Image (tube, rainbow, N blue to C red; front, side):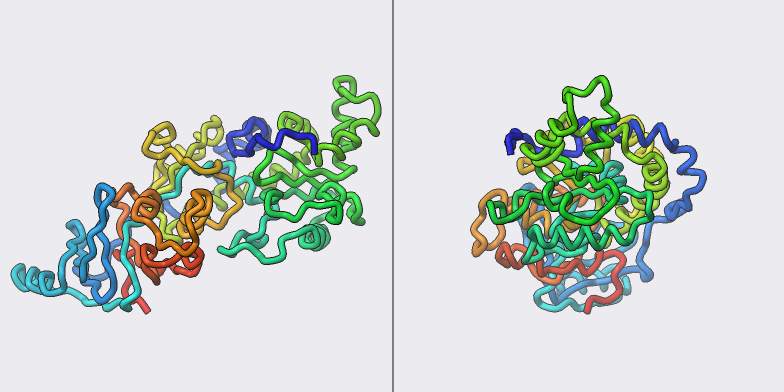
Length: 413
């Protein structure tokens, strides 16, 4: 491939801005909102079903200014901050104030920590892309935390043939999140471009890479692009265009913009009609995963309108859009892309992997605090995990389960 592999693909790439221009020309927010059954309208903040509860028996961490303090128990009430203390101290406090509480015993390994936040998320663009098929190593719906063991050309081949059968005759096969950097590459392995053109699939195919600004397309798509360019084409003949695609492996960087005018408008319009429902799902899944806030970096005019629409309501998680340029939220790892499971534990694992942390090394306070509310809950609350992430090795992070938020959970099994 002759393309510059030093470039990285992010959802801030110009391609996605132009794609959002296209989407907003096909459907407006007012139309989406009119037909949207908003699950959050008049939603009240969740409150405990009993006046006070005490969780004990597990590990209870209070994090502040990069330090952690371990406690025996936590007292939760509806009208005050959580109280961390020993079980005896909490029992004394309840007796002193004539308070009654429900006691919930955790397993010894279960751990209470501040909720996590998701950094640098392009919520609207990610939600649009989720209308496409995911070609990453985490399953079509990105439901696995661990990469599949045999992520290779054979998997991509099977996926293409399987998905082709699920589409109507006029639909394109649109995909994203192909992790080219972990796929085997050698003379014995065909390229993605070669795989596409070797299959008996009679529809346009376009798959976006997860790491490089590359779109893998088949010859049917390439011909549509060539015909659309017409007099503006830098190629005299279609064969010259095909030769470039063979050399690069697909459309590269600014060439991705050639796709916008040939994308099927009706298919895009249909996908955009599910945008708000997809965002609803992401918000609920974020809460279930242990997030309390999504720090979004959506900057397109249409995206900002969608974010503003959601910020009117009480949401399962906070959507924070005013921290984009805040230094506290800078991410010093590879740019975000919605190709990994929506899990704080997967995010921790990826962070440690990018920092080359030894997989046998227990997790550092600094790394875990960085994924939380900077040690301050900011009303984000606390979450119960099945294991203590401070005391497990890197690989074992992916085996930890989020059991729920402490203010809504009645029993932890």
